[in-house]
Image 1 (cartoon, rainbow, N blue to C red):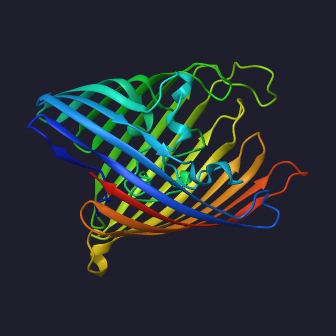
Image 2: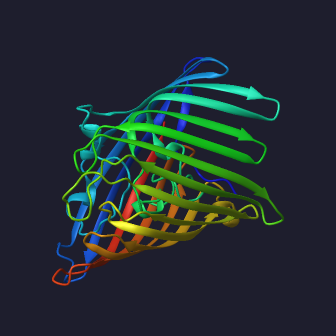
Image 3: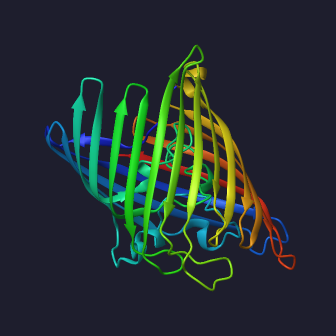
Length: 355
């Protein structure tokens, strides 16, 4: 089973291609009486054009821009997680406190090829999630799950869109990705350094192809402690991601992550799992459907625990356009006895087009 992708590219010349994605969502939340916010419906749009220049077989210059219209439910939802994990209007301005708008990534990559593998070297403005905590079935907010919990591991958010370098090595069934970044600002308004490694191993069995990935990542001591008195704590995290295909149409994933609670953190651990199916099972090979559950144990802030459910059906209208119907249920239990818990349903539609 192969994951769906909306991103496509148009070859202008043999070496130049342009592409990207436009995704519009409308979501309505129906909350419990004590959720602290009102029932609401909001829309938003993410626009991400890309350009790729390949002057040689082993070289690539790449740039991705990001534009947003509206912020969806982000400013009216009581939940810790975003119900649509795309970069929206506020996310693409003053990125990481760098006074830079709309430019998400811009990098150069050189690939060395060998008889039994390859080594890619990238530097520029990068996104750590392009190299770490990858998943076949729960990684792409434009074609798969919308909720932030199922896009990448969020026990410690992976930094994006800042100066860094990455190494990608593949040989046989093994792969190793390493990324390092200098990030302009964290929630404590401190610049920090970040480094992470993902080790992956691909298996082939009578069931189908599977992959296990171990990600270990951390920062220097530029994060505040739970009491808010010092900014000298490090963030450290480990995540295991499992993907397994079952025949041509079915797939399953699981994520288990944990991080140190020395700094101030919202979540200490995460467990998510789900199933995905390709539409060829019912005669629509370009469609895909998914269902997932998540449990997150709170860290040392205001959330005691979070539970998330999501299911979606993505209907491919043609090879570039798809409409997704999505249902989410979320519950955040407060760690503060005087505060109310937040729970409710979110119903949405996503229209995404690749160009």
